[in-house]
Image 1 (spheres, rainbow, N blue to C red):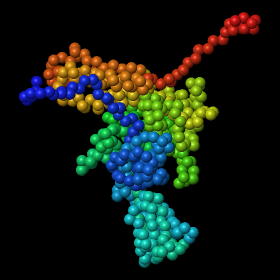
Image 2 (image 1 turned 60 degrees about the vertical axis):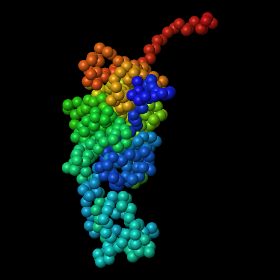
Image 3 (image 1 turned 135 degrees about the vertical axis):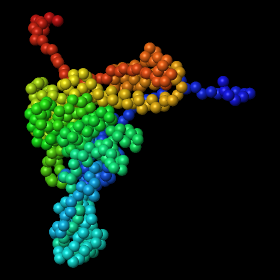
Image 4 (image 1 turned 135 degrees about the horizontal axis):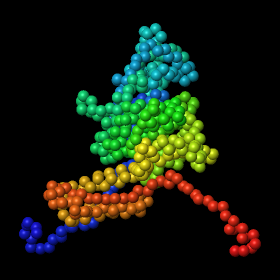
Length: 476
């Protein structure tokens, strides 16, 4: 009964039924690396190639621009970028470097890229030239262009002194990160703040070029467990087939000795054409796999395995691996057997991702070792948790319990209709919710669901029979 007096008519609004559960974003890559430009140790949301331009173009030694190109070659995905290269710390000095301007276009390239504090003087060191009056500078690429209206003579030579970013000074500790003396997060630790900043966490973690170090790979696995994400880890450049396989055991010498349902081992490196070098270069498989996973999530759903999906933008692979769909001894099958994702390229197939299992296989044989099953469970569990914030602190009664149950069951019906799961059910068990727990404000809601495993093995049973020879006599 209302506390106030009313001589009249009123309407009381009652909410019955479930509330929608919103699915958390799955096609989100957490990329930690180095770039020739852009913010430093700050999570930056990248939604398109135009957003990616702030980190500069793909230049040798810098991992972020190349990785962004690899992801967006597949046309989909959101990337949270953390650039750990601090130009004030990870730098070197070039002194009196001689530049000669090409007479035709008045251009000259510095020996290094990602430059700052450039000082240009004449050959004798007597005249200092001014940027904007005598020349222009593209700091990211290190291109200096002589202005015809300035004081630098056509085809002349100058001496350049400047500082430049040195990728070799970035160490594993910079990528791993942590909390600095000011209480700020750095490196991979910054990804833990993404939900507060953007409303979602990265679900695919990569650190191209650095994940080959065991220390970085171990941190990625730890972060994947915290964020309920998948860590994509590459073998080192130059690793052989045998090293990849033995790397799974105690005698291994590479970073493949993981047994985690949230770790994907990637082998080998891939070949991609570099406009900078006008030649094919090797790049990590992990960044292309991230792009494949994003576009697969968007086009087919996070419950679809990335295996047997096309890899875009590559010209080949570091190693030529035997690949035959009906040969258990082919190298791609032997890699999959050891829990390693690889590439499949056979006659007329094109380049495809090949493999369904996380690094937990073959130590674990449960179906959660399927990458898509693990991701499906993570996405569903997290979606239910986050959408349940609206129930918190409401009075516990049957109406609240019914609303929670209907919300989750409604969500399961939607997922089943979308083809994400085979079915699911949420329920309230009174025996597991004693008075003591309810008095403490604690409810236990149970649910179960069935993801869809991928078709990893198809067996046909054939029989040679003479029963159809009867057709020779005209019989039916």
